[in-house]
Length: 214
Image (cartoon, helix red, strand yellow):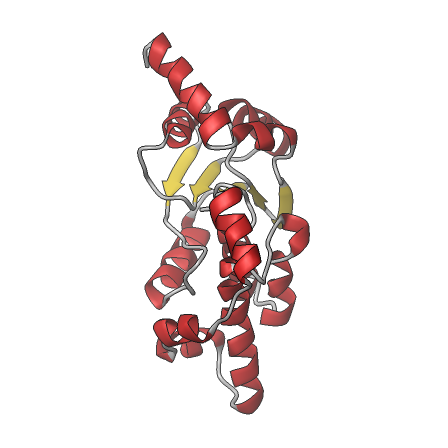
């Protein structure tokens, strides 16, 4: 990567992608066992995370993309000998069965310790961490839903609250009819669920247009 391109990418990382905020607060937390969660890490943060926690795998929930943050992350992972897995998760759509099955496959096969991250480490990272607790650690959905909490920057009254609603709908359904989480996900209608969810116009405006959450 040429020096000019490298400088350009770093400027985009910190200014356009809001990396200056993450440099102050990386939203780094331990989920359980060998899994950690954070916002989009910079190359320096990746090096520090590997040194401190022995991270072997990075799971990028933003997916493979053309952003400067991704280009720098890919380069850093190669230099740090970290396994980079790109898997797209969405913050404003309830998870579908193929996405959940993809996460299960990743969680069962990656080398731990591992780090999951999106842009802010709040919404997509939150639902991915919750699914890890449900599907790998066999915790209840109510317990796992704590991964979607305002202390991580997740606001359930914004559009991303559809993720909370997704988990709440399963809990409500399972109280009436005993059914496993995976069985329910295979049959539920994500489009109808999304249409049923109601968010706060103000909070959605704040996070979508002003803060520009993905």
